[in-house]
Amino acid sequence: MPNSGLDNAVNVICIKWGSLYGPEYVNNLRRGVAKHLKRPHRFVCFTDDTTGLDKDIEALPLPALDLPTGRQDRRWRKLALFRRDLADLQGTTLFLDLDLVVVDDLDPFFEQPGEFLIIRDDDLFRSKPLRKLNRKRDRFLASVGNSSVFRYEIGAHAYILDAYVADPAGALDRYEISQQFQSAQLAAHGNLQYWPREWCVSYKNHCVPRHFKSFLQDPTVPPGARIVVFAGSPKMSEVLAGGGQRWYRRIGDTEWLRKHWES
Image (cartoon, rainbow, N blue to C red; front, side):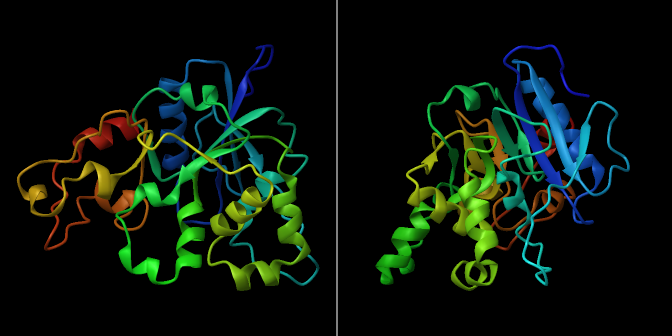
């Protein structure tokens, strides 16, 4: 239920549709937020299926994407979070993907100055030297924000959704994934800013020791990390199930990760 009567409450939201993620992802995310966010907040899950969600989770219907008649592609449904009217929510809002693990204090995500803050996607990956062969594309990809974790004001960036709804076919032709389109719109309006690099880290690239060191050392949380993100492969479900190994990379002990996830 909403934290009614609390002044200056912020919002933490997530979105779940289809069958890729079960209710445990929402429940564990909620517990992680409750454990690591001190300020009054409202936790909302937009979903098409409330089955199995804990009672303290405020579940709301998926926001309408309002695509033109005849357009049925809903892969970019997350863009509906930029509606001018998002249920009855107002004010400062932190969006969190379901496949991440909160490991430390979340309050700084609401204190960092900026109109719109997001992970810089390149910060989650190793450098890609071959990408520089196409300098224009390299510059664009270096600017893309990873939409696993972003903060914004409800209704303040409706131009993102407006641009998509105006030409969804063109958007799908020009951009591979929605976060590229979203980043291009934010940059065009001068609103693309990034979290401090150390706050959101990749499990594979920052927690797991590199190369053959992984066979000697277990994964750890890097200094300053607040959220562990599973960008690329392996996915969180694979790692928690004991998978994700490669001939050149050992995943090692993941018990600390499970403890953080299950809070």
